[in-house]
Length: 185
Image (cartoon, rainbow, N blue to C red):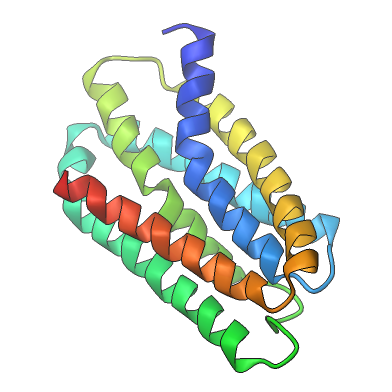
């Protein structure tokens, strides 16, 4: 596998985490570079670790993460997206999330968006591919994409006001629906 393929795989695996980061940025009242870096770091770490875990556990996780893992990921995204929509509709001044995203929510979102990396790692194991470079590149690319995503979400959210929470919630619900649709197709 060439380096270009690794970068493309990493960007593909990071796409859902990027979308979640945009949603987190939409929910921010004030931009905090440390908070943005923490969100990106958690997402990047989860992607890399889940890729390695899938590789190390091989074909066992390929069967386990299939439908059940996708349903869990979609459920977490549906609940979080619904909460964002509810919060934005309920508040008069626009979305009123906590001053910082609760760490548990960030962990759930990072886990939900990295389940595909777990399954992909199992595929690497079956193909006898070297996963360590791919995991490192995936972690770095996810970090960078998520950092950009938080910034994009925040600056977009400043201009969209109350609709920011609704937009972010809809994005998360659509990601969950995409995950479920992958099982159907």
